[in-house]
Image (cartoon, rainbow, N blue to C red; front, top):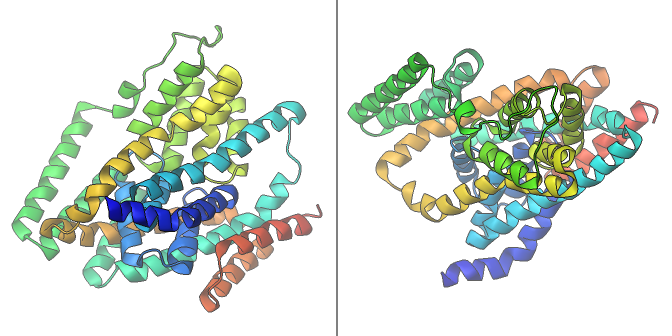
Length: 398
């Protein structure tokens, strides 16, 4: 305990500065994890590439906000339990404050000048940073042909199967046990996972609707009746029970707040999503926009915090024992399967982002230049992102 407190006292200022900065300027949805890798692991060497991939594996197997959970993991690696809590808080708070300001501006003016121009130059830079992170982490996580095949399996499973992220990672862990530990237990585990998944499909069970019932009995013709407490309960459930990261959570959020609860119209939700893209840090800060529409300032504040609270609970409960668990023989073998699978999954996320970020020759050149700069020099991601946004404004004639 004293050692943990000593780590926190020694590094809390550094953790605060790094994650306030990341929370204030990091864009890109899943690519934020690549920005964290470049800033925290590559530039500052708080932990090894192998440990970073283990953190990715952990957060991908949990419900909730992946980027925030990874920030908690990194803060814990640097400054112990309190460092993890501080890192997560510092990562979330800038996005919350900025979203509250943008929501007020949007309500007043109906648009935000230069936003599209900034993203024109910023998006390809973020993709370039993400690509370098995938490459570097892949080199650390994939050591042999078996792990290469596991990465390919995970990518294909995400793209072309109904398995989903969690089932795919569990299967990869079972294969890891079979290849690097006990073949018998690995095979038994794999068949057990597939059997449970098959029964789930046959039963038609879907955990998402059942854990998030409508809070009020409303119809499109009747206005929603909800307050900040309703908003908080709803978004806590979203953060606690939705797997698949921010994009999956946004899709479910849209289904609930538009089609089930009727808190927002489809166009209002799209407006909130646009503001979420404009806001740095976790994209799930769209919850603050929804909360503001439903219950004003307090709804925005409660919604913006409640959706991240489960991530803090999960990570801060698991991290004190995670270091011991991963030393267990079978867990070491499982991680040898899970780690390359995570690389396959984030490679898919990169490929899905490319056509949206690289839309013409100038954006293609920006992405290539970003990769080249990060390959040749030890350069932090944040100045590159600032440069990309500036170039976007200049190229767009802003």
